[in-house]
Image (cartoon, rainbow, N blue to C red; front, side):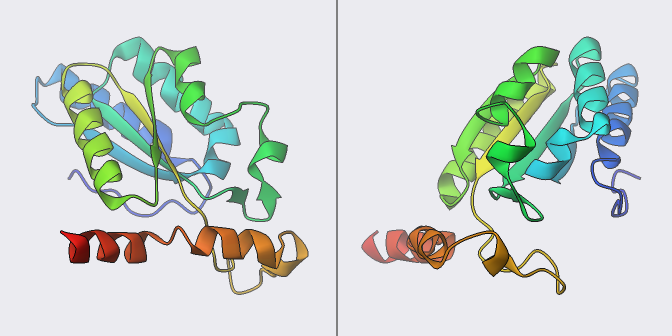
Length: 170
């Protein structure tokens, strides 16, 4: 099976996806593995282990990170010293792509490019820069760690409205 269940512990699926990709490479399969993760997962050991082995082994994998600016309530700039998620790829010999996560077509194109690179033996970390406008969980109170102005600023970049505007103009 090429589809894995949800991982509750943050980032624990990343080495599994790397391992599956390595197995597919050893079997000469023309396919990639794909991991979806949040920016908070990039601060876990599993992320670093998984990307390190992906780079060392040249696995056909795409790691897609939704950087929504907060790991639960921790602002991105307080959870890592890196300026971007995509630049973390460099340490592991993995290609990094940073894309406007609120631009549907840009994300589509970035993932297609990442897929092609992965098929050629170059694992890729895609960082989709976006924003979580709602609470992280039902017990989360985002008003404790972000301002209304910040939320309003990102509301103007809503991906659904942007894509609707694009389609209507086209």
